Image (tube, rainbow, N blue to C red; front, side):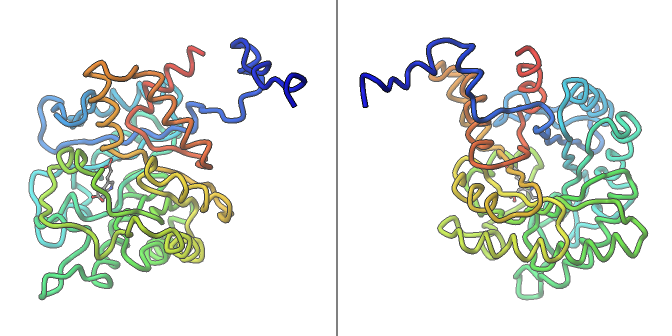
Length: 325
Ligand code: PBG
C-alpha cells in the first residue's frame, strides 16, 4: 500500500516510460490503403479524407515508393474504374485499373513490401454492392463466389502477394484458395476480412471510390451488436485457408480484435477505416485535438487490443514519425 507503492515511479521521465512500455507500434506493422483512379491526369483530393488522394497511375507509383522508403509493412490497393457494370467485370479484366495498378506498383517496389489487393466487386458494379444481384435485387452469394475466384487469380497474376476478400460472402476464402491453387498460385496468400461490420464509419470511403451504393450492406456485413458471430466467421475463414484474419472497423471494435487475437492461430489485422481517419483529421483541423499524439494513441490502442497488423491511412506518415523516434 501507499506510501510503499508509488506507481508514478515508472512514469517519472521519458526514459523509464520507454523502458516499461508494453505496447509498441512499428512501421513494419502498418499497411497503407491507396486509391488509383482510371484515366486520372492529376491526383484528385478526397474531400472527406484530407491528405488522401485518388492517385493517377504515376502518382500511385511515387507514393508507393515513398511509403516503402518509410518502412511500411504493406500496401493495399483499391481501384476506381471509369466504367461500371452489373457484374463488376472491370475487376476480373487484366486491363482493369486495379490489375494494371498492381503491375505498376509491383514493378516499382518488387518484394520490398507486401502488396495487397481488395478483392471485392463494389468498386466495379454499377449498383455498388459487393456481389452480383439476383433477379429479386438481393445479393447473390453463390453467383458472386466464382467471380471472386477469377478476380483473385487476376490480382495474383498482376503481382499481389496477398488477396484481401472484403465482400463478406459466405465461402469466399475457400473459393479463392481453390481458384489460386488451381492456377498454380500456391504462394499467394489470403488476408481475410473475416469480421467486417456494417458501419457508418465507411462514409468517406464511399467518396474515395465513387461508390454507387444506395441502401446498405446489412444482409452481408455483420451487425455491430455481435461478437460471437465474429468468432464464428474467423473459425470458418481459418478452416477455408485464411493466412491472416482481419477485423474492421478498428476503434469501435477493439473488444472484437481482442477476442479474435485470443483464439486465432494466424496473425490478426485490423482496419482503421476512412471514418476513423476523418474524425481525427476533422477535430485536428478545428484545433480541438493535437493531431500527431491523437493518431499515435489510436494506433497504440489497436495494437494493445491485439492486432499484429494495422491498415491505416496514416501508415506512411506514422512510419516517418516512428523512424524519427
Ligand atoms: C469493400 C470495402 C470497403 C472498405 C474497404 N473495402 C467499403 C465497404 O464495405 O462499404 C472501407 C474502407 C474504409 O472505409 O476505409 N470493397
